[in-house]
Image 1: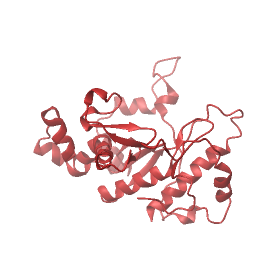
Image 2: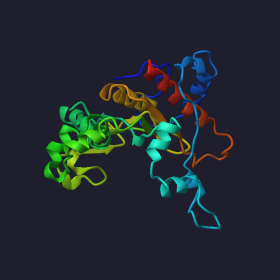
Image 3: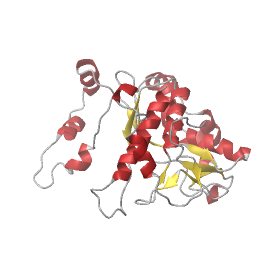
Length: 271
């Protein structure tokens, strides 16, 4: 599935570093770039950070209990208070990304779907369908725990939303030899790769952080979630780009461009 948004900078590239940010910023300042009115009513814009990461240890440096500590230590009846009284939601967030076949070989095409099932389906299928993906059960066998009927009923429909932490995507290559699978789940019989069989990468390499920038992956992952799990509520809970090589951190237009193009593909996925 390919995107239909205005910029075509997120296609599979040759691996060379170049600077597309000028064209993105030009698009950002044009009338074609979406504004708040371009999104559906009720679409939520916001920023956030992790209180645990910011606050640090609860008893270090003279600090007492914070909001998160209170939640952890006094969580009895939390769900009732959060949802019934405060009108809140309970969900989960995943470090996400789209897997693209390493080549046109049918084995690589199937491997891409297997990695989607082993990473995202492993968590999402139980809370939407009440059980693990079929391919996981086949390949993992009796090492995969079985849910009881009660657990399946409890799990199905137990999340109010899915949070997506998206930065980039990867290629998926079929690998039948599990001794050669180091960083990925060897049961999936597949490995993730930064480049494909022709040496091409997804999107382009950012010149300041050397990450692959691939907005199309966010679009495709949102569409995947929409179609596979019947259009659940989704929050993009993390998105952005590091700038370890930038000389002036205050002049970070590439970050503006990065967020802008990912915001644009998010709007496109909603349609």
